[in-house]
Picture 1 (spheres, rainbow, N blue to C red):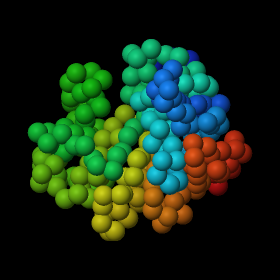
Picture 2 (cartoon, helix red, strand yellow):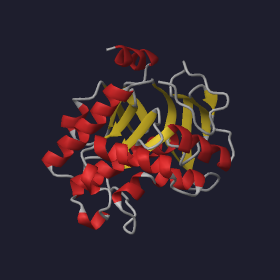
Picture 3 (cartoon, rainbow, N blue to C red):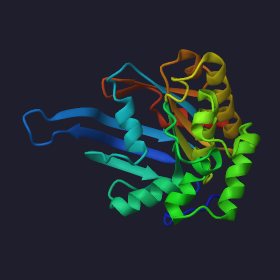
Picture 4 (spheres, rainbow, N blue to C red):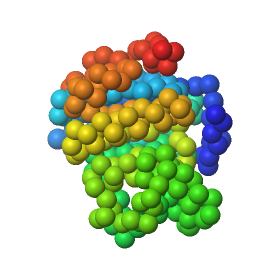
Length: 252
């Protein structure tokens, strides 16, 4: 599948989606309480991967996910996104790269209450272009069909169950066919049946469309069903950091 999007200039289609080298992150820099929370992270996320990130609270998972998601900048080190050096871009460049490359699913789905399901799925198009045109509506409806919500397009979030709302959020993350979706505890607020359904949807999109997923989870049942487990401990990668791990998981 060929993916094109704004901000694609300079990408290498054969490179890993994410390549971090020596990435560090500190807060309160230059003050007596300066704290480094990521200590030299080396990590690759390959095309088509389906990986879990685990670790105790305070281990640095959320900070690392925010860095990969271009929501925060590293203090030191190098970040390449599809082969393109990304950490030195200005804010507009980061926004373009984020919209063109990454999808997001959160524990709390963050749907817009005033929008119906279709409009929520099409939200990335509205952010990028300022409108939801016919093509965006067709894409959003196709995604709702794919997640089993074909008849719910006109329903507001308040008219949907928690599991249905998370399926809308998964569809929204896929609106622009991103090569990588970052999922932060996507099943953490769901009952067992809805969590299973959400996981299976992500897995199906991974297998059928080649979309890579990086799933932060505290649920060992979720992690055990992923192809690769990346473990964070005290701001470092305890396992799953080797380049070989990324390559072998894609080849399975």
